[in-house]
Length: 123
Image 1 (cartoon, rainbow, N blue to C red):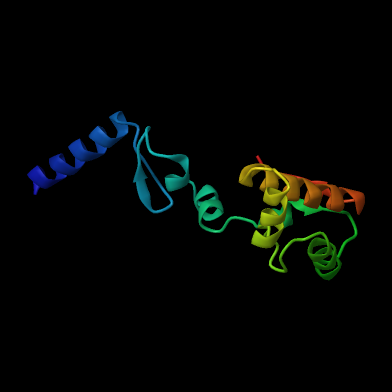
Image 2: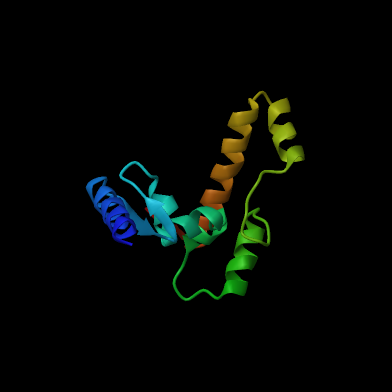
């Protein structure tokens, strides 16, 4: 009995000297990634916001935001990915694939800004 109590005491002392903690249901050490131990950071990794959800405008309802987003070229679910046919059209005009994607993304940005939206990326 005394041996098991000593063993538990040694284990607790060892963990305290190694700076280990318990967070998010896991044992976390000093080199453990933050998302592994921080529940909020872990949830952000598992369920990231869509690109469109970072575009905000005061007084907008979800439905009016969706209409503006789709009108500017986004998907109904808030995501954005340039259509292949649009990329191919720009590639035929002499742009590279990455330049074509960037141009289409810039077009979406300017459309949303012209409608009064602001891009707020969380830190």
